[in-house]
Image (cartoon, rainbow over all chains, first blue to last red; front, side, top):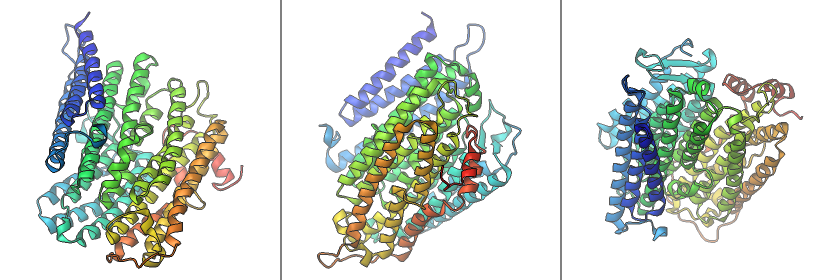
Amino acid sequence: METHQIYSLTSVVLFAIGIGGVIMAKHFLKKIIATIIMGGGVFLCFVSFAQRDALTFADPVPHALVITGIVVAVTSAAFALSLARRIHQLTGEKTFPDEK
Amino acid sequence: MTDLPTSSYPALLVGLPVLMATISLFFKSRGNAVAGLIGCLLTGGLGIVSFAEVTQRGTLIHILGGWKPPLGILLRMDSLAALFIGITAVVGILISLYAWWYFSSRKVSDGKFTLFWSLWLFLWAGLNGLFLSNDLFNLYVTIEVITITAVALAVLSGRTVALFAGLRYLLAAITGSMAYLLGVALLYGSTGTLDLGLMGQALEPGATATFSLIIITLGLMIKKAAFPFHFWLPPAHSSALAPVSAILSALVVKGAFYIMLRLWTEVFGVSLSYAAGQLIGFTGAVAVIWGAWQALLQTNLKMLVAYSSISQMGYLLMAFPLLILAPGVASGSADWLAPAWTGMAYQVMAHAFAKSSLFLSAGIIVFALGHDRIESLRDLVAWKPMTAMAIGIAGVSLIGLPPSGGFMAKWMLLKGIFLSGQWWWAPAVLLGSLLTAGYVFMLLRLAFAPAREKIAFRPVPHILQVCALLLALGSFLIVLPSENLIQFLGGTESFGTGIESIMEGGVHGNE
């Protein structure tokens, strides 16, 4: 199995773990971490397509995209965390009311 | 594409709101709102002017920094983009004016919500950027800008119910955009480009194309709150402040829909997606009926209006099975393409006007009474006649009674459905209208019913009611230039032929 295939398969597995976590985990933190794992999967997928062959340089475009993607993902995760923290401060809840 | 006329409008449409949003952050309370309102009026004005420019000169492009694609970023303002930007501009100006008086006439204890202005301007920049984008990654970045600012606006009131709704909205939206981005990664891997046009040429039908089509569409359907991913929309839209609800419902959900439309008509090949088009149409039909049914069951006005959004957005998805041609059908012989496009465009416009008017009217009622129980609409014609009128007019457009924009939308959609022979969509359109009539007339019945007791309400600034009424009237006025609009839209790629058939029969003519 070639390197980029291992990367691609891993990325799909990570993505699936993330999706499962967002849907099935109840705790806010677990849900948010699941979205971060999902993001990791997607970025790994991008990077795995950057490989061309052993002689030439890797395709730089996916790396530029991943950098941008990471910035966006960090921002959304930070925002989600601050929302969860505010909810916890106001109500003491760590889960959605209908998911207990 | 780089030989099209260049213009600086596309760049200004994104840059100006970002600049004004940043400027307004430097001021405190009053100055912040003044800068914000000026920014909104300038951005709106620019949107209208650039729409007019596109009607004169055709598609405009802007190559950012002089770096030509595929390396650089190209902003494209064709007639479809111009239409969306134009609607956003008109609706956005009226909502901004409403917001100005809504916030300035509230007591200090209610909070002045000064962050509203910069968030709303950033959101506006994101929307304009989305409509102008011509590559998949730019679309991703703009829709993320929209999501983050939209959630921030939704939780602006700081109420617990809004925070819960906002977090759910954000988690759903992140999941949706990650799914979209995975699809983009796969498409880039198989075609080596992100440009919509180039990708459309390079994409070969196969497993990768099918999988990325599915995952991108699923991701966007989450963001668009299509059935069965609509769960986050009603709480998020109904718990937000009135101007924010209007922005979210009238404009933000259109963003994800716009990407879907672009991708399906420009990238994913014809034969690839006929069955998927049928499936999407089906989820749209279910949303139309289910959303309207849920709206009938609500006891709070804002929840009713939010469920109505799910129903009305379903009509947009029902245009997809008409726009995606079956294998072997040449677009030249498909005379239903033009009516389907027209119906969809009218549905976008009519819904943006009517829904923002309804949410602003609901905001007036909350402002006056402190709550929005539907039962409290009793005798509305006596104590807030203008608001009652706005609800009535907007409601008539949602139902689709002539001569409203909603009528044009549903009429053209039905025409496309019958011309294409896909008659099975027609009952859903009609049943949706019937159920919509049910909840609109329920509101109007109460508005005309005599009050049981004397109603105590806070005085509401007149201008708030004027803004809501103007938006409601807008959903009728869009019918006046219908012939010009149809011809204008004909400039969009993949609009197809059949425009003559509309013109000959007349827009309101019989077939």
